[in-house]
Image 1 (cartoon, rainbow, N blue to C red):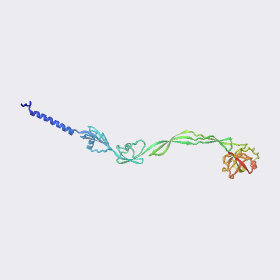
Image 2 (cartoon, rainbow, N blue to C red):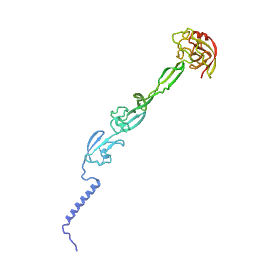
Image 3 (cartoon, rainbow, N blue to C red):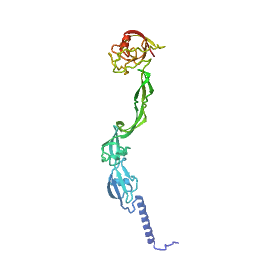
Image 4 (cartoon, one colour):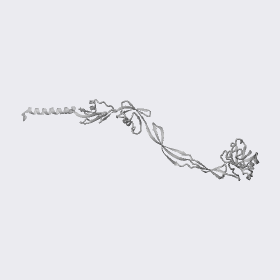
Length: 349
């Protein structure tokens, strides 16, 4: 038996056809990605210049293609190219500028994202405020293929220790034989510390500027006692007098126990008679002063002369050469009594 539908079949068929068509349209739209598409408003800033767009682009990369903005790997794009486009978003593009750096004589090529020479310095790891000497100046705008020369300049503090020489103080001492001396205090140099500022450019030091100085150790003056005393009752000659009056010779001194013997030819003299009152060593001429040839008997050497006593080699003379000496007396009579004679003297150690 055949069962008939409860209502008209035409009405049912039309209802189902409309639903199927709508479903098909939704499926096609979802596949193509176009469901009642609308344009999106965005702002693109390229190297500081802003542009507003209405776009149907789905990501930043397609947006830049649509806007005919060419970018390379060295350029800065923010947000990144794979970021989806949203309404009201701002995309910033900063193109890299190719420049050549000259650093300490070496050339380096760099792509710089920035607008001034200062930005280029930062890109290569240099501080524009550190005192670098830069050409062009740090505030100059960047240009394609420009050359930037940077010299490394800084101030170095240098310490230097300087030696302070000591002074020598001389004092007369009658307790020391004439023509000899003794060191009471050994001299010691002092030290002073100096601080300099030095400008260094590309590793080369420039001029130094003294900034501070401090004494680390004071110098110790050397104290030397110069002998002015007489041995064996020797008498000192007064300057300005010839002492031409007769006087007795000093008492004979005993011969030393040791020393080097030397046979010499001797003459006698008196201060102020044919010679001055000052000797080659600065000692006052008088009894006990002997003029010698320093190549034979060094100045300052103590001597013993038989019949005269002890003396000091403290003077020289134009005629005193080789084994020849000149002996000083206090009076002309004493000198005449000595005259010229050959004696064997003792050179004391």
